[in-house]
Image (cartoon, rainbow, N blue to C red):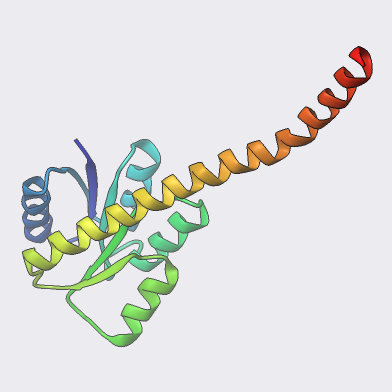
Length: 155
């Protein structure tokens, strides 16, 4: 079962998001601020992150920036009660996959969750294919040299 981490300082919203994600087949864990969210990500494996922007101790944008600096490919959805063009642009430029406004429409949440998870699945598959191709390319000189050597030995 996929796991989601919800980073939200308001408990009623955390509970609502946990229930919504459970309906989508996720097991959810939660944190109250960005610092706790980073600690949870370091100690566990998650398939999705939902985060608020405005929180005590560490805001959501700072947390997203630190996550992306570690090259973590986890899908990140930002949820905010204070929407603005600037906060949307900042969220996406720091590495969020999408942006939702509170109160969250559950149909929108479902669509954005599925889209973000699918995008990451495709990115991971692309990385695997790139590694395979690189391995094949780097292996070609070995086979050329081996073929030349064997040809010289037996011809």
